Image (spheres, helix red, strand yellow):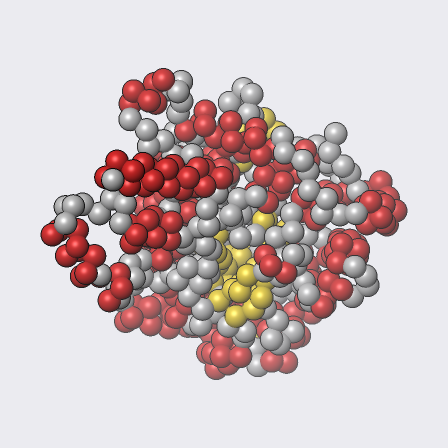
Length: 510
């Protein structure tokens, strides 16, 4: 009788293992609750906030384009010489009235995400001009074919909630053709929420027209925008960039949600002291918020305050150090304190290869940003070489890592059912173990994250299977995913309509 029971249990376990290899539901899908890590005290947050408001009121913003200057002054700003000062009352009123949440639509409604509150979502970003070649293991110039490949690869990665173009197609020199072809790569390869950048404001209307075609008709995109703009309208320290401001006006006119990104660099364009850096960077991102809400009240904006760190010995950007861990979590904390949708960055490893440095820097920064409560966490997959590079293998490895981070965020559920005195008593007074118990089987499928690529075999099995490292396993997984049939996210008629509309400015890979 015991043998039969053991065999039935073993068979059930084998079936469950086989199911996990096919792909069980995640025990911690995107949208888990962040905010557990608070590197700043409430008093410190208040001090930094007060200094940010003082900077805006006493120093103001420089190089303000005339149209924006007029709008800011009409809203209560004060023009003094070549700067526009933003009084505390104006900034606080804007914070109080700005949207605290919004829906970041996917073209597939089931892939939409709610941004704000304490929900954490990981996505991509970056403008890598180099790609880690899958054959040579060395870097080469990124191409349009790479962008299509990255977009298609991430479409099936469950822990990445949205896709921002992660590389620049350096094989396209014309800026209009680059922007239109980049947008097409997003529309053709994923139905997740997507984001891109616009080089010039006149590139916004044709891309909106392409989105209308993908959405089913004129005005369909504006009614349910599934593409977000990445804009950096503020140039540190404390001045506006005219071209980016013009792009902001164009995006808001077409109801495109925006991520206004501040990317100051400690010791270069912002103070080297971490507190001073956070105060200036907060002030600059608040200036973007005031701009957006003055132009179009109630428009959704991700408050994307990204503290960037440089190695002060050399001046090189350092995306994976301890300061990055700390500062992006602190930025998320400051933004969440204001009740605004927060955007920070992680996984900006300085490593060039898929190695130990890569894993340490990615894991530390992703976990801290998530625990800090970043609503949208950018750069979280695929980026290498201090954002200069992107890696196909990195995408699938990072997806596994992000699953573990999300599981960490889910935490421990403590209830009478999970404490389960009766199950403990039955095991202690019975078989002396919990293997095969119903509660164990249920928890195994409900509560545990099983990585797809991490190796958990004993050394002998690992050796028998070829002694592969993470890079080897990732290459195999990328091959498997990219060899699968390409999804038909655009119909032939939609593709034809886009090509007719864009003409030679729409480039296809190959």
